[in-house]
Length: 173
Image: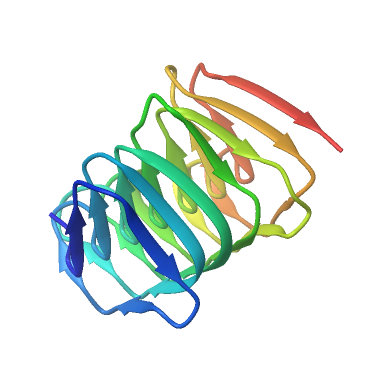
């Protein structure tokens, strides 16, 4: 778990940190099993999972992303860029999630099993691909609240931008 980093506590990835060219079953770049993951300017790119989820990041604790780039990551199943498997409220208020792929399932950019809030025009989710939810996929136990932000040029069989697998989705702004 966690090709570059596996953490069960608080993990902060600040500007200048780069996690690239790693591989694992879950969390090709980063795997967090609890605690809080904060991404504030880091780059997570070109990571893969061999058979699991979370090409760039697999997180089961709280996720807060204010800036940074998650790009060109590939997951065999869910969450090419991000797999968020947390019952907490997770927030993305800035950053770019671009050109990630979930090869055989949901969420090219992000797949969330928890509450996900995207709340800033500085969020850019683009050019990701998956079978369902090229940009963002929300599971039946997840939810998405989005005010502002951009989701464009994603590709999927169902829900190129957003795929709601039964979870609640609220869009505004």
